[in-house]
Length: 433
Image (cartoon, rainbow, N blue to C red; front, side, top):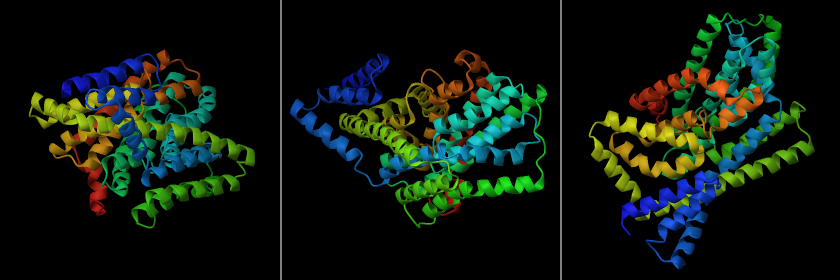
C-alpha cells in the first residue's frame, strides 16, 4: 500500500469516528490499526500496537503528568483561588474594570500553579462571576475575558503540556521549554488586560476601593506561600536540584501542606481528589498510549515525510509555510484536545519547522500557543464551555465579545512564530539551549 492510501485510511477513519462521537483515544487506536492493516499482517498489528502503546507511557518524565494533575486538583479544592484573587486586586484594583483585570491576573497566577486552563477558568471565573454580575458588568464581556486569559496557564510553567511535548520529541530540555513559555504566556495575559481596559474605560466600569496598607500586607502574606510554589518547583527544576518528575512530586506535597494549613481539605475530600485525579490521569495516559501507536504507524508508513515534502513543495517562502502550519494547527485545536494534538502533529510539523531554522523549543511554544487558542473556540473548546457554564451565559452571547481577544492573541502568536527571541531568549541567556 502506498503512502497516500495509508494516510487516507488513517485520517478518514479518524475523522469519521470523531464525527460520530467516538472517544478520541478509541478513534486514534482504531484508525491506527486500520491504516496498519495494509502494511503488516493482522498478527503483527496486534503485537506491535500493544508494544507501542505500552512503550509510549513507559517514561519516567511522563510520571510528572498525573502528579501535576493531582497538584492542580488539590489547589482547585484548597481555597487557593480566593487568596490569589485578593492578591491580584492589589495590583489592578484602581484600574477601570478592575474585576476583569483581576480575572486575568488571577488566571495567570492560578493557571501557572495548577497548569490547567480549565481549572483556572472554573476556579477564578466561578469565584468572580457573582461579584461581576453584582457590580453591573456585562457578563458576555466578563466571560470573554475569563476565556481569553485562562489558557495562559498552559504556557506559564509548570505545565504538563511541555512535559508531554518533551517526551514526544525526546532530547528537548524541559527546563528550556519551561523558561521559553514565560514571555509568550505573559504577553498573552497582558494583551487580554489591554483589551479589557479599553472596553472598561469606554463603558465607564467602576474601580475597586483602595486597600489600606495593613490589609494589603495581610493579603500578601496569606498569598505568599502559594506563590512560593512557582519559585520552589521551577527553581528546583531549572537549577538541577530535581527533575521535572521529582518537581511534580514536590508540588503535590507542598500543595497538600498548604491545603492542610488553610484547613481547606478533609480526609473525605482528599480521597475524592485522588479518585478524580486518577480518572483524569487514566484518560490522559491512555490518550498518550494510543497516540504513540499512531505515531509509529505514521512513521512506518512515511506519512510525516510525505506531508513535509508536500507542504515544502507548495512554496519555498518560510513565512508562508509557517503561516500555513499555524492555520492548520488552529483548525486542529478547535476540535482536538491539547494532549492528542501534541502527540499526533509534533512528528508531522516539527521536521518542517526545524528545516526552516526553528528550534524544537520554539516550535513547542508555537504548538501549545495554537492549542491555547483552540481551547477557546467552538466546537470543542473546553475553556469556552466551562467559562460559559460558570457564568451562566450562552455561547452565542459570548462569541462576539470574544472575537477581539482571539484576533489579538493570533497576532501575538504570529510574533512568537516569527520573532524567535520572544520564546527562546530566556532559555538561551540562561544557557539551557
